[in-house]
Image (cartoon, rainbow, N blue to C red; front, side):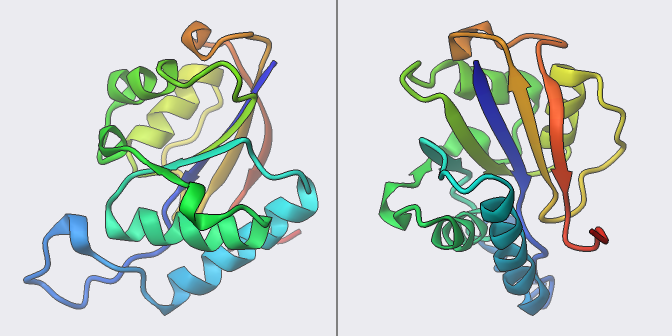
Length: 165
């Protein structure tokens, strides 16, 4: 069985219109939200993932580092993959399919609309838009990441900063 956590990056800043999209940082709320979701994830699943993989875009990379810190995962062990930046479902699947099978639990930090579309593709869970710092856990019966395909998984966890517990 493989467990896949999909996390949309936290709230980013639009304060500098000259800044390229790739370089947009988190805003203050984004920092707080990432820490909050990291704490909630640690409470829900105290064992850190085998792998955290993130888009190298500043907002996703910072989100991944903040989450990793809350999970007790070494930030230097985060794998930054350029294929996660603004990727569509085929691009995301290509990245996931290339993951070594020794990884049983993985957290991927990326962007919309790709993560929303991937969640729907893998599970048929109906959602229009994963909110910033929204986190899904998808459990699958597959033995290899290469076996990920349409409707192979089940959503077992969904959280986001404004969700009332």
